Image 1 (cartoon, rainbow, N blue to C red):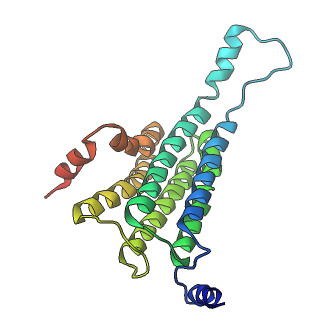
Image 2 (cartoon, rainbow, N blue to C red):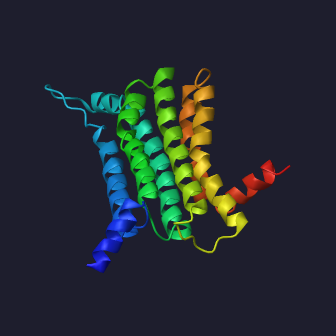
Image 3 (cartoon, rainbow, N blue to C red):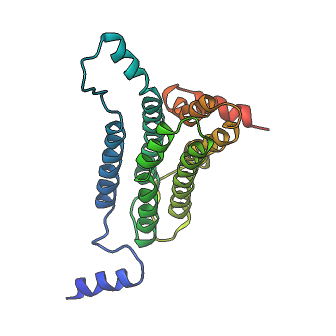
Length: 223
């Protein structure tokens, strides 16, 4: 009885309730990322015609899918960046969770789940700046929500942190902020070049692929 009472009291106070475990939160988050990243490719449909196609016509129809394929590649890279940052947050920073952090994570997942819609918009209306704007705002909101989760995990008295140096924390913040910052740049340049906007959306993945690239960026931005 005393254990049940303690759990109920912690839940009511917003503390770390035994039923709200980090494992369940990570499982839900990983599952949603897997579903969203799979749904992206379902938007790319094989061209089907009622009449027999020549090889040239088939190639032409496949070329028409290029905007959708580009949007898929961009979104897959963006989601990969966010998944990596989310993984680091719950393995290197936050060693436990509470209701507040779980709530923030739910808002984060809500906007992650919106990516297939904004990706479809981007692929179908690739020549319109409004599509770039909607997609960019989606990426920015996801990034800002993830930064809010990191900030809460670092400074909440209820969340236990791993042994992190200030430099490591700065690096984690930088990696999280790269997608939304590049999304802002993509929105700004969309008036001049939409292809360049797409490149900017996907560019943050470079800092996870090329070793030492983040160090070079920090040196370049250092006053």
